[in-house]
Length: 306
Image (tube, rainbow, N blue to C red):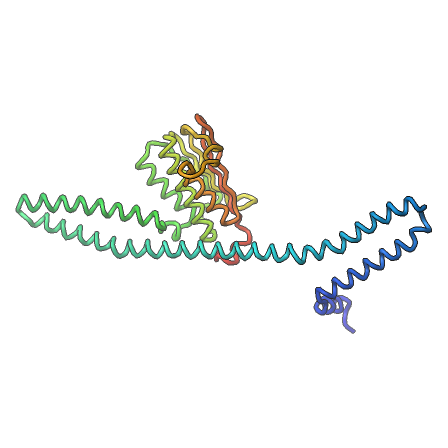
């Protein structure tokens, strides 16, 4: 004979949602009928009316609650989940396109510029005409500037370090580059997530938020210290950028519209919210500025290829 567990599993497989709901309604009806039938035998008429109203309301909620959940909340949750998946796929596709363009520029135009520079160097070394040497040097200087501009453009499109090494390493490399250009001190705290990899969309969004937050701090705040913290928290992945610059009125900035609307702040928030995360900015004139972004990680690996 089949075991009890086997019979239960077979019954679960054969149950249809409509059948379960019909059984639930039948049991609810039976309970209400028994209560209303024996209620006059237990309490007087006045109490009976009040209790009957409470019982009817409770039973009505018990019946309509699950029905409303199935009719409205379940489809709504599915729509939200589908929207999130589509948005993440869109972000992933955009980042892959940017990465492909970045690689093409680096391998194509970058290599051509490098070859051109080598040719100009050869002309400079073999020529004995002062006028020619002067022109070649000017061309080499222009070529070096173009090559540096191309490298900056490639890093802006899709830094190769992000694909090859991950978010924490890419941030450290970018900070090393910033140290060469700005006198501010940069402190990084990311030991707990060093070497970890996250879904492409999450790494890209947090890296762009880091770039925007540090660029705003260096451009407007003139800080002497910038702290970057990357940490795995219960809600997901946390990125925090703090600077000791002059600060600004964050509430007024969020409330701005039209030309007064700070594009950088809203672009950072949109990057976070598209992935179901949050972005907060704490600042006031004369105080430190803190940009804090949290993006959830759980549930995104299934369709982002973590």
